[in-house]
Image (tube, rainbow, N blue to C red; front, side, top):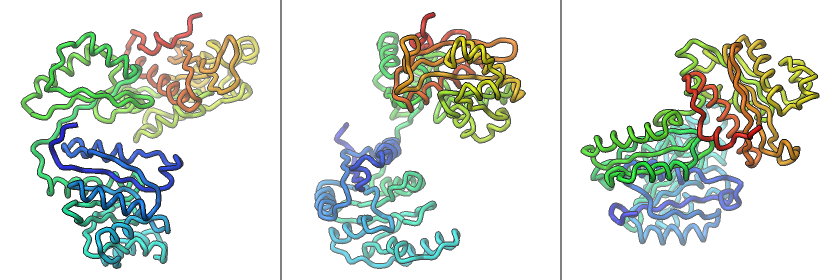
Amino acid sequence: MAAEGPRIQLLLTGDELMSGDTVDSNSALIARELGASKLLPRRRITLGDDAQELAAEIAAICEASDALIINGGLGPTVDDLTAEVLARVAGRPLAEHPLALAHLEDWCGRRGLPLNAANRKQALLPEGCDLLPNPIGSAVGFMLEHDDCLVLCTPGVPGELRAMLPHVLEQLSARFPRRGQADVLRLQTFGLGESTAQQMITDQCPDWPDTVGLSFRAGAPQLEIKLVIDDPAHGEQRRTCLERLESLFGDHILGTDDTQIAERVIDLARDQGVTVTTAESCTGGLIAQMLTRIPGSSDVFPGAFVTYSNALKHSVLGVRKETLEDTGAVSEATVREMVRGALEAAGADLAVAVSGVAGPGGGSDSKPVGTVWLAWGSRDHIDAVCLHWPLERTLFQTMVAAAALDCLRRRLQSIDEPAHYLRQRRVKA
C-alpha cells in the first residue's frame, strides 16, 4: 500500500474473536468503506478482553498513528472494556455522559424495557469525549483525541457498525481532507472462480491500462470484480475495460453493485409475468430462502417444497415409487418428476429441483459425496444435469442452491450456452 495519506489503524476487541466463536467481518466492512474514500487502514490487530494488553496497544498505536478505530467492547457487560481502558490511557476519568444516557433512555423506552444498571454502564464514557450516533443499538460510539491521534470507538455488532460508519467517515474526512475519492464499479458474477477469471483477463486483455485498477472479492456463491479509477478523466478507459469484461464473461455477469443471483431471477420472472417454484432435497429449503430474502418475491414465488425423504417426494410431489426404487433419490428421473410435481402443486410456470449427496457420509462408488442432480424447466420442456461438487456440506448446499437459481436465470434469459461451471462439474454419463 502506498505510504501517502493518514496513518490509520484498526483495533478489534473481544475474546469471542480470539476463540473463533465470532468471525471477524467488521474489519473487512471498515476497510471497504474507508478504502472508497482513500482512507485505507495500514494495520489491523485483534485482542481479547484483557485490560492491560488493550491499554498497552492503544497507547502504542496512538503514539504512532494519526487515527485509531476501536471496534467492540462498548456493551453492558463486565468484559466490555473499551471506555474504561481508553479513559485510563488518555488520563481522563469516566463520567456519565448526559447525551449517551438520554440515548439509552430513549432506546429502552421505545422497547418497553427498564433502564437497568448494566445498560446504564454504556453511558459511562471518558470525560470530555464526543459522541458518534448509533441509530440502531443501545451503545453510542464516541471519540476523543490522545497523543495527536483521533480515536473513534464503535460497537462490535455488525449492523450497528454499518449504520455508524457514515459518521466515522465524516469525522475522518473532516480531519484528513481527501485529494479525491476512488470511483469503484463492482460487477457481480456467478460460475467463474477467481483464478479462472484472472487467467481469462491475463490471456485476453494483456494491455490492461494502469489507470484502471482491477481486483477480486471471492465469496460463496458469487465472485465480485472491481474496476477502480482515481480520476474521472479515466472514465472512458474504464468503460472500454468494462466492455471487454462483458464480452469475455458474457452471461456469467449477473449485474453491478450488490446484485444477487436470486434478485436477478425475481426481476426476470416479474418482467416476463411468470411464476417460479422450487423442489428441494439436499439443499433443505435454501433455494427458497434465497428467493424470499428478496423484497417483493411474493409477486412471482407462490411457495416451495422441501421433500427430504423418499416418502415425501412421493406423497407431496408425486414422484413414482418405481422411480425411487429403480433409480434412487439422486437421479435424473427423480428430479424430473420433482419438477413436474412442483409445477402442478404450486401452479407455477417454472420450477427447479435438486437432489444430491451433501455428505460427509452417504456416498457410494456410483454416487460419491458431492454428487447432485438438478432439473429445471416448464411443463413443455425440462432440462437436467448431474454435477459433482466435492465440498464441505454447507458450502455444497450454498453452491448447489446458487446453481439451481442460475439455471432458472438462464432459462428466463433464453441462454442456451452452458455455463463454465456446468462444463467443469458435469458428470459424464
